[in-house]
Length: 108
Image (cartoon, helix red, strand yellow):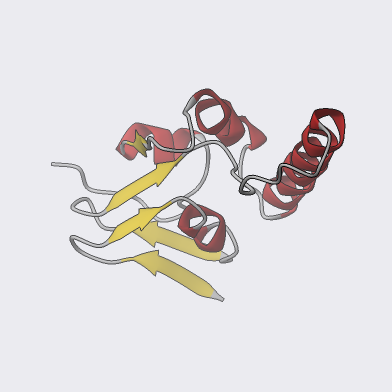
């Protein structure tokens, strides 16, 4: 499958993980691609240790998925450092370094 983020498109939150699913992946230089911490909603009935366990299990699955797709799992570093109500915007160098794109990006 080919995945692409088109000109001036916005691909945030879970969208970059969809982009990662392509065998051939690209993002237009004018596209905005960004990540943040995983957020599973609030559940006041779930004890904190179980909630943390669920989040960590989910993050482990994402790391395995990224590795399987040929994306550098270090993509998770800026994601994990960015609160769920903020977005870390990946620049052209980030997209290349983390191998989120497989096609060259002309960033002028």
